Length: 506
Ligand code: NDP
Image (cartoon, rainbow, N blue to C red; front, side, top):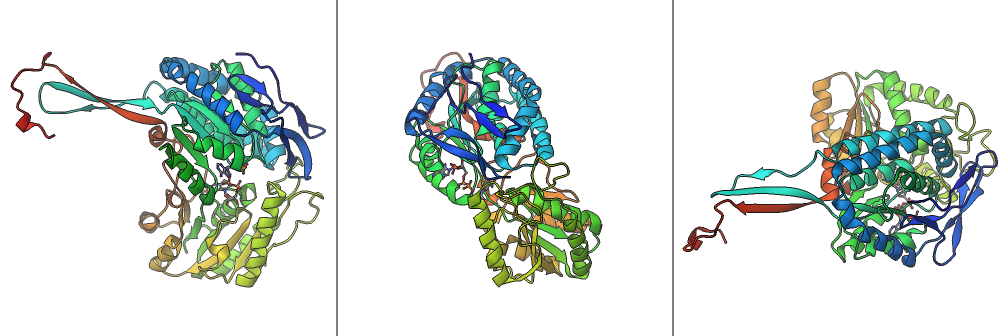
């Protein structure tokens, strides 16, 4: 496989050139020749023109992925693992460029983007290690028979990726898909396509066969919908909003594709009266300010025990005062911009709604000294907010939290579970029995006790209720990228006449 075109970044000018889609091992323009701009959210200025792929390009990418699917399925697992490890080495070699692209396109501050890209080989290595280890099981059936299952790949898998963690989310689903013998077609978010295109280059250099991995950039309603609707796509992993997840599921239903959904959340951070308050404040701030609140597990509902509410709020204010918001490439920045003008307008609109639903306790405006043109917003906290308020129920995807006080666990659990979402919860306190008793009653896919969320390749991530189906990461993710075949062998060597059909269950 040869790379015919390379995405080049000019870090000083903050621009990139030669963004091409990656189909069947080659970088090409979209069939229509169309492009759209992607912008630096720190400045609002255009970084690059990105190909606007449509159904024609999706057809080509899926055809390539289908053509090579059987060959890839029967490539020795150990060889697939070797390619994933080669890819991990390529990511490490190009980590700085990948991180700069990611920071520029998505608004992650540079140090965070470097941390994220630095972690990506862990996912590739985890799945490389499992490629030749996961399998089926033997089953005890009556008679002289051997019965067992084998896990087989789905075939062509689609990966529709959001803009908040563009490369990590791509890798966390494509790594298991590839390791377990599937081929991939990726549709990045239109706001953040660049790191996926650079990654495709590294896939190519690592030696993956043509067609095994493809990237089509474009709009969700064009390229994304065409991919989800494609009859040759056997599995779809979608990460993004619950609303779009429902639309994708409907498209998948028309051709019965398997769907993994990683959707929205409105996660609680719960502070018990015996918590270390400095730790609790740190977890709360990380929870709703990390990546400017654009995190599916963001802890945007702060449930603080009534006995410590005032002290907690005082410490929270002091901690937020010390949070440095600004250009992601400036030294010391801890919170960059929102990803786009659209997201900025959306978050601002929620802040205005919040002012009518509660009391603004902190922030709500544009940070002092933030660069002109960028989509910067202050960390924002509301108090005196009812559980029915829109800002307490809807996913805002910005650094906006509401504080709710509680007195009894029954009241707390009822309020936390009264949500269409059920993704994640953080609990802070010292009485482990009390913490675990509460954790058991929460309708969520993940709980972190006395810590903040740290995504890892080995722990299953996903949601209850409208936060999703299936799991990314961990051994549980195997089910999302495989299907079961059952085989039974009659060890008698022949089918005897006079089989007792009456004794058979069917
Ligand atoms: P979307 O759910 O709209 O987008 C996620 C991905 O789906 C993108 O690649 C998008 O493409 C694509 N897409 C959009 N429409 C379709 C479609 N009809 N068929 C197939 N694919 C489609 O999220 P947004 O980026 O618009 O963000 C909106 C909200 O989603 C956020 O405010 C937040 O609440 C939530 N969100 C949740 C995330 C999570 O991890 N749970 C992550 C990101 C967002 P395109 O970018 O071109 O629209």
